[in-house]
Amino acid sequence: MTPKILLKSHLTLWVLLRYAIPQIMAIFETSEQLYSYISELFAEIATLPEAREALKTLTLSVQFNYTAPDCTMTLTAANGEYCVIRGACDATLPDVELTMTGDVAHRFWTGELNVMGAITTREIGIIGSLGKVMRLAPLIKTAVRYNREREINCDS
Image (cartoon, rainbow, N blue to C red; front, side, top):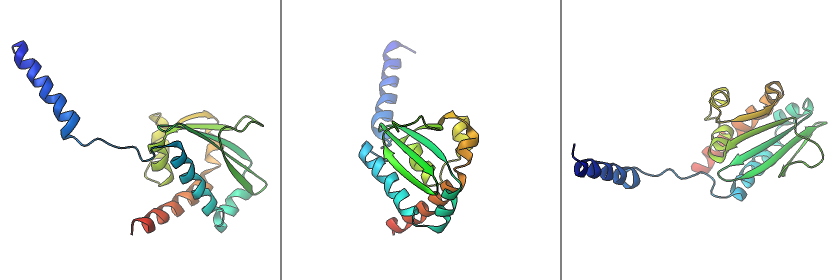
């Protein structure tokens, strides 16, 4: 191939990639949107009996570090109660830190994500014990089930 033809084919490819293929937009444009989404989810599931049951056995602090958009949230559960705060917990170090993008978080909380696969491929990063993360499973399952129903009702 001559340099002129090669340049033209690269330019054509660039134009196709840039304009012909739709660009994927992030689910959450701002950290405020992400924080509101998760805070509202937890406020709503706190009223469910299965969530209250799951909380009875938990004593755990989990820090969620999100990127795209940047946002840190901490879930602390103890004595059957929980709180979700924006930012890191200043009082103690979290038992576990989970790091993921906002889009991965959305797929996580809607049940569209294979969590173990995401951990393996490092879509979700973990600092701390995987066993402690697994103690969250009953609460996460309740949140995912409720969130799916919530999103279906919003779409209809």
